Every structure is written in C-alpha cells, then in structure tokens.
Image 1: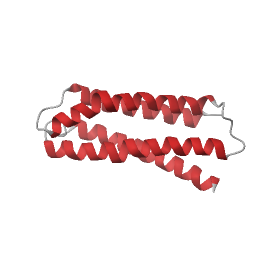
Image 2: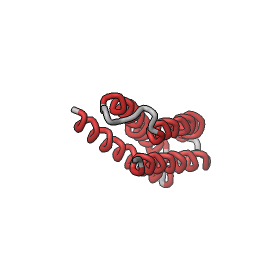
Image 3: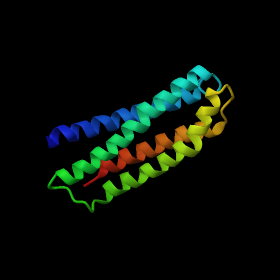
Length: 134
C-alpha cells in the first residue's frame, strides 16, 4: 500500500507540474483576452492544478505518517508544505481576479502572467526539494 501511495504521490506531482506548464502556455497565448480561452484556463487551473496540488499535499502528509522510516521533523517535507502557501496566495490575489476579468470579456493584465510564472517556479522549487531530500 505504501508503495502504491508513493507512486501516486510522485505521479500526481508530475501531473501538477505539467498542468502548471499548460497554465503558463495558456496565459501567454489567448487566455488573457479571449473569454472562451479564459474559461478553459479557469477550469484547467482549478481542476487540473489547484485541486490535484492540494490532494498531493494531503497524500504527502499521509505518507509521512504511514511510512515508519520517515521522520516528521524532515525539513524538506515542511518546506514543501510551506511553499504551497504562496501558491494559494497567488491563486487568490493574482490568478483568480485576473481570470475572472478575462472571462467577463476584459483583458487581463500582466499580473496573470506573473502569477502563472510564480506558480511554476514554486512548483519547480518543490520538485527540487523533494528530489534532493536525504
């Protein structure tokens, strides 16, 4: 069971990373001004990035508790958890309002590009921490 959960955690992490790339590509193309593309970006961001990312965090905590060789004082686990907080803030303050503006027919500002780029950089940082762990 632990091996399956570990593989699910890793695969879900790759999926979240891939969707973060798709988010950035959508933001850099038509999603800033086209309401239909912004609607697709909204669905991809909510259901492809945020929800699986939260599920992956929960799965990581479950793995820390389940695996007897893991230590709850592992710095890399707490750093990965702490790095998700800025993603939630970026989602609420930058991505959410700008996507809503684009969906309503307006043109999103550079804050949408900044938010998508920051989310991708944070995901890359979390990947680096999880790969470099002892």
